[in-house]
Length: 449
Ligand code: NDP
Image (cartoon, rainbow, N blue to C red; front, side):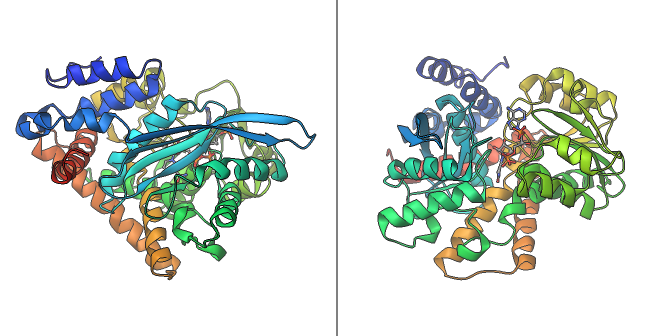
């Protein structure tokens, strides 16, 4: 455990006491507190107003039962959460995750990260997150629809375009968002487009939202590489995962002249030295909801599937973890360093364990933390909210340029703040300190609420 500033240590101990058995939440809090020593020494007013304790305590936490009927008529019960963490910068904003591993602590870690990520975008959005331990894998469309309708029958009272605006995350794509939106509209009798983001293009969605997280991560890593007079052109890249974030990260790497030689899912790793064929991957994953083993078959002998290796063992210049939390441990990071990796940017949330981050930064690998590197998704969600509010829709080119501008702005902001605190090139310090100051100043301005 890092040595925290003496002012921050008791705050962390209180988080541990108050939130037992929520290891991922503890990890996310510790990572932020570890960057804040110099900030609180410079701003004792944050300590006096107990801003940090307040940030660590969600404004509201909603937990509810979701009963639904499966295709055989059997009653199923899941648990759902919405953690409304901070509304100091805008309506709560953050995705919904459907995965059997989802617990309250998972949602709290994601919601906590989201406060700072959303601040970094410079757009008026607060932080929240939600989800359920429902597993959409292997469920029919009708089952997914019944589950989403049941979930929204409770969630609708807590969300709204000025209150709380969910989006997708693991296991929640356009199909799920469609069913959720339909039920919200039915219950409220309002066509309130701005209540959810990530909608389909024909019913209030934004161009580039689907691509935004992956594209944004790649734009961020390109900016990091530029500080060392390098770029993605000609680079060998590995991308973990093969879902929404991974697919569009792969697409953007290829557009910028790099080659993605490996991707993965929970069943294993695919190595494709000629470059992952993103059109086949989209067909397999997005259209047919298949597995990477299906991708390998369709590639006809070019790609290999491995269930016994870690993706981080594949030598590369750049690695983009885009699957899930804690997917890269110390060993994984060591393997990357050994393979010559120069930069890692987190497309997923908290994919690198603290030990992995120490190995990477210790070896001089450029490291872009998720709250900066994957902020493109939520930023484009905020652009979707803007378009919904003005009943407008922008072109792909214009929206992509806005996304790129935002990502370059986040990179610049993190780099400048890291310099200011005497840690040049440390994007973790830059992201945490810069976002925290913005949130803390707004909290001071708005009083004790
Ligand atoms: P998807 O559900 O589309 O894809 C998730 C991918 O990660 C799949 O390939 C999945 O494999 C793999 N995966 C998920 N859980 C595990 C696990 N426990 N172990 C191994 N592999 C796993 O999700 P997204 O692409 O939307 O999200 C990926 C990450 O990016 C998450 O951390 C999410 O929070 C983060 N993120 C997403 C944003 C978005 O806009 N979607 C925005 C910002 C961050 P399998 O199919 O085998 O389960």
